[in-house]
Amino acid sequence: MGVNIVLAAQSLQAMKGMIIRMKKDLELYIHIPFCARKCNYCDFLSGPASQDEMLKYTDFLCKEIKSQGSLPLEYRVVSIFFGGGTPSLLPLEQFGRIFDTIKECFEIVSTCEITIECNPGTVTKDKLFGYYTLGINRLSFGLQSANNEELRLLGRIHTFEEFVENYEHAREVGFQNINIDLMSALPYQTLESYETTLEKVLKLEPEHISAYSLILEEGTSFYERFSEHGEEKDAIPDVILDRLMYEHTKEILHSSGYNRYEISNYAKPGRECLHNIGYWKRMEYLGLGLGASSFIDHVRYRNFDAINDYVKALNSSLEVRQVEEVLSKYAEMEEFMFLGLRLSKGVSKKEFKQQFLISMEEIYGTKLMQLQKNGLLKIDEDHVSLTDIGIDVSNQVLAEFLLDDTDI
Image (cartoon, rainbow, N blue to C red):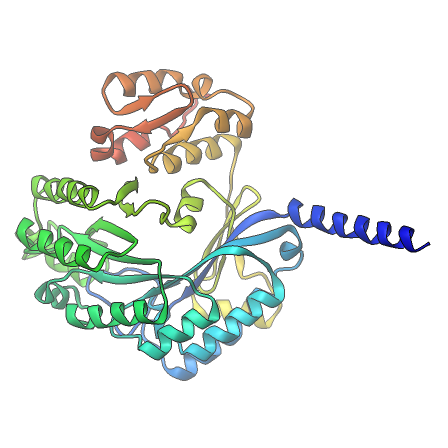
């Protein structure tokens, strides 16, 4: 009898293990829409808020996490990303509530990458230690520039010296995986000032660097000043200087041991951002919070981006996640190509066929051959990836993978 009980228990345990393994991987994105003040270039869904407003928002965010129905039974969480806005503006105790709610509702794998975006000037050593204690294991600092004049022009609330102090505190409390965001092609920026920023950042030896060119977004003060209709339009570096900055970024970071694994992202070996890679590889993700986007079971969703609509829906037990697009098979093929080709490894022909039950050549054969002939794509036995020239004109190359009636 005792042997039978033991065998039955072992069988039950094995069944539980099978159920856990059958769960699909899911990324969580949690939007914290608060900032100390709006930066001059920013068009993100964010703005200043009082402590009371942050407390109430956390209440509703936790309510949304708890309202996911059967989703936690079907998925396990492999990465969590707190974005904004400025998530580090939220009081530490509110993060504790959010974490407790996530753990209550979802299975979180032991290797889960948990990132929080931090703006210098909004964290202290105690708050950073609090993040570390909660289980956050990756920080992403929004530095943008090491030049204080450039930071003032951007509308940032910090100096480079304040950033360095925050960064050193992060190391002291135990963080071993830190990203630093940088921007190039800023108004009045020179190649020399940008290279100085790179040099100063490299001395800190972060594990990851994200380097983006400034985009002038309509509705921002930068757009009014520096777009082609603005009075200071000549302050923006021209295309040649912009490309020089991009090329120098690649060369300088590569010589310092950073691999470019995505068009704008560089990492030391093994320190690539798993959450970002999941996005480019079309892993399913759940967006929580105001205006957050989700990709679940071939459908793209977006939460209400007006706080009154968001709160009203949660108070009425209505769905805050609205269908944005039900993806067709061909729309998913497009995404597979133009998202995956952002990665340096590119896309896999084998994975394409596994997902869509048709070869990549049958859908894109002519375009692949033409882009390879023009020196924009590298094609080997299994992988298709952008060449250096292809990366330089990536927007045009990626647009080639949009399908029309003649392709289908």
